[in-house]
Image 1 (tube, rainbow, N blue to C red):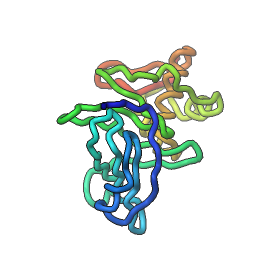
Image 2: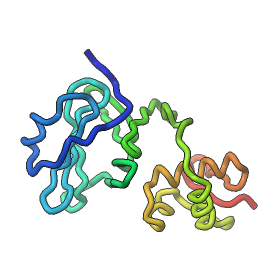
Image 3: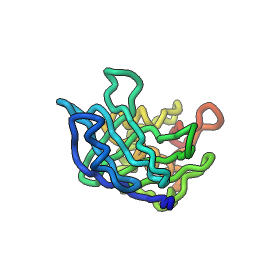
Image 4: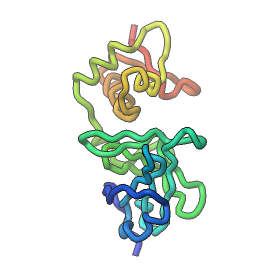
Length: 175
C-alpha cells in the first residue's frame, strides 16, 4: 500500500550504499553514506512507491544537492524531482517534505521564518537590482528555502518586489 509521508526520518550513517538496504523500512526514512564526509543520502521515496532515491551530496564527484543539517533537521537544495517512475517532486526543509505540483508547493502556506531573519534578508537586498534568493543564502550561510520564504514574506508586507519571467525568484527593495 502506497503511503505518502510529509516528514523524513534519519536512520543513521553507513559506510557503503549496500549497507542502507536493511536499515530503510518505510517511506521517508534515510541514511547518510559517509566516508570522512557526507557522500550520498539514500532516501526511501516518500511517495510510498518503495524505491530508494540516491542523492549525491559530494560535489567532488559531479552535480550535487546542497545538504544542510541543523537543530531543526536536514534540508536539501534544490528540490528533488523524479522524471521517471513515480515522478515525485518535493522539497526537504528541516525534516519536512513539501510536495510540489506544477509551480505550487503543498503545505508552503504553513512555511514561515522569523522577523529577525526577514530583517537580515532585507538588509542584503538593494533597490537598484534584483538578487537571486540563493545568492543571498550563500552570502549569509543560510538554507536557500528559508531565504526564499523570508523574501516571500517581505513581498506580502510590501517591502520587497519579486522579479517577473526570467527574474522569477529574484527580489529587490521596493522604491
